[in-house]
Length: 336
Image 1 (cartoon, rainbow, N blue to C red):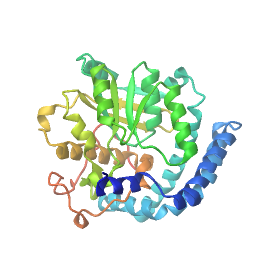
Image 2 (image 1 turned 120 degrees about the horizontal axis):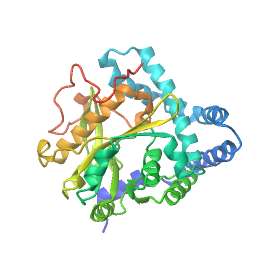
Image 3 (image 1 turned 60 degrees about the vertical axis):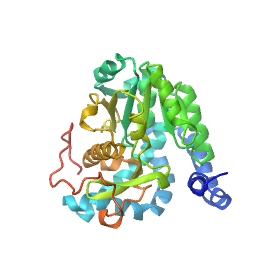
Image 4 (image 1 turned 60 degrees about the horizontal axis):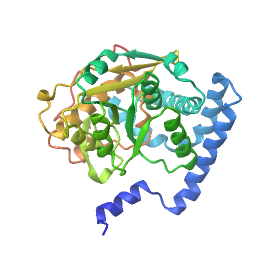
C-alpha cells in the first residue's frame, strides 16, 4: 500500500492532466519547433531565434528569479540594477543551453572535445586507479549535458541520475542523447543508488548533481550564502555507502563559447565525518562559490525558491552565519 509520502511525491513528479494540456503540451510543441528551426540556421542567428521564442516563458518566471538573485547578492553589496543585469544574462544563458542541447544531437565526439578545456583529469585518473569507481559531484552551473557528453567522448563510462522530464519532446530528445553518447541514465525513483553501486563495482564514473531536490518531502534546508535552499541529502547518503573516491565536478562557459570542465582532487573523508548533512552543506558552499563567479549560468536560478534562513528550519549542521568575505576557490573572475 502506498504511503501518504509516496502519494505526495508522485504529485511532485507527475503533473496532472490540466497542467499537461495547458502548460506542458505547448512547451513540448515549442521545443519541437526550436529543434526544427535551428537545423537551418548558423549559431549566431539560431541563438537569437531561441531567445525570442523562450523569452515570454522566462518572463513569466522573472519574479522568482529576481527574488533569488537578490537573496544571494544583495547582502554582498550588489545593487538592484546589477541583479537585474544578471537576470538578463541568465535568459541568454538559457537560450544557449537549449541551442547546445540541440546541437549535441549532431556533434561527433571529436567536435565535443574541441569545445572543452579539461582541467584536473589527473585527479580523476588517480581516483580510478584505486579500482573503486569515482563519484563526481557537481551542480547545474554551465551545461551539465556537455559535461557528461564530454566525459563519454573522452572514453569514460558514465552513469548518472536524472529527473524524467514531463515535457514529451524534451524527454524524448534527452533519451536520444543518452543513446548517442552511450550514457547510462537512471531516473529518480528508478533505483539510482543501485545503479551507482553497479558503476562503482565496475570502476566507472557516476555523476550526481546535488543542487536540486527532486524529492522535496525528503529534503532539508541548508545555507546557500545568505539564503537557504531545500536539498535532498540522498547523494550524500550514497557517498557514505562505499569508500568510492568523491571528487567535485564543475562546468562553466567561457566568452568564446568553450566550456571549462574541472575535476577537483579527491575529498578527504576524514574531514567530513559520516554525517550526510555535513557533506551536503559542504557541497552547497562550493555551489555558492561558483555562483559568485557565474550567477547567470546557474540553470536553477529561475526554477527553485530560495528562502531567508530565518524563515525555515535549517539543518542542524548548516553553517550558522554567512561568511563575511567569501572567496572563490579556483577562479578570480567577478560577477559583474
